[in-house]
Amino acid sequence: MTKRIILLTLLSCSILGWTQVSKPASTVTVIKAGTLIDGVSSTVRRNAVITIRGNVIASVDDASAAKIPSDATVIDLSRATVLPGLIDAHTHIFLQGEDPAEGGYDIQLLKYPLAFRAARATVSARRALEQGFTTIRDMETEGAGYGDVGIKMAIERGYIPGPRMFVTTRAISTTGGYALDGYAPEIQVPKGAQIIDGPIEARKAAREQLDHGADWIKVYMTHRSWTGKNGELISQPTLTVEELRAIVDEAHGWGRKVACHAYGGEGMQRALDGGCDSIEHGLMLSDAQIAQMIRQGTWLCPTLYIYYTGWAPADTPEGQRDRKRASEHEISFRKALKAGVKIAFGTDIGGLPWTDPIAEEFPTMVELGMTPMQAIQSATSRAAELLDQSGRLGVIAPGAYADVVAVDGDPLADIKILESVSFVMKDGKVYKAALAEKR
Ligand SMILES: [Zn+2]
Image (tube, rainbow, N blue to C red; front, side):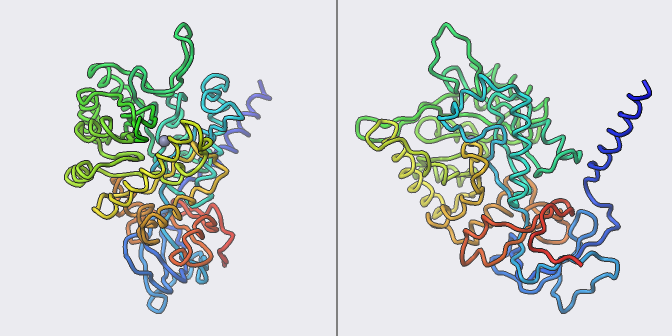
């Protein structure tokens, strides 16, 4: 009994040590920023001083005019480029790259205990934060239930390091509309999403997920894709408009939003007609669909880079499909960008291994037509707007949370520099300080 009391005391002490989440408002930190990209402005600012009280930015001044309080902790980033904490609006912390040699997607659901997947998810979350992604919208747990709600809770309470999380929980699709696929009909296999058929089941699934902590609802509006007789990309539609409308109506009633995975064709059309808030991937957007997105204010989260990786051999049907996906995606992205569709940065990492740099999406966005500043804004102020967090996240300005990152060099001249973020502050707390000279 005595032993147990001591052990419990030790445990609660160490837990208390971890639970210092945000700094008390009285602490003052000052960051000297050599170059500042604030996430909103299209121009950079030189020699700025960012004053942080607790976990909130209090002021941003020119160095010449700034009064640095005598009790402030000064972080010298005067030789670096300082930006708002980055936002990845499409991640999967419960996926680990789906390498076929390691059992692909299926092994995650068939053989790995949930605790193992959750342990790996904590590593994924830490990886995101270390790379400067201080916020993620995690786009479903792939059979790991409400695990994302638990990871988010552990981060918020300070037990593990990680980004701010907006979670979608289980996601929704229809019978025949999600993996695991291809098993004998006699065998019951788990599904990576909650399966519904009919508007009543759709609404019930949305209610369940919202009840258990979903910040967003994720819906798969297309599933399989293949190339048709003339080499055209065809995607299998899943939910009907009526099923999606029930989900959107429910989510909007709760003040939440709906993200639709949709490649193109009929499924894409149903996603837009059903009133979804963000199209994920959007490989094949017609001109009329782009016009409808602009009319309805629908976001596009394109996740470009992943479609340029892991192609099957060119002489196989899968290889032809993979190449067609990338070429169609490029056309759609360029058209959407030109037309002024709202675009948020997203990677689908988890579909890619978490050992990959998350920021490898930036160079693809720039190659396909964005300016480096547009690409950065898609991962800062624009993504914050998608998340209804304008002014709080994705910007360095008074009133915003102190989520600040820095790189050694000019990302506007070389966007790949964002793959080596060397200073990370989230909520006023420094998690990585390779660049900073503290005094
Ligand atoms: Zn995804």
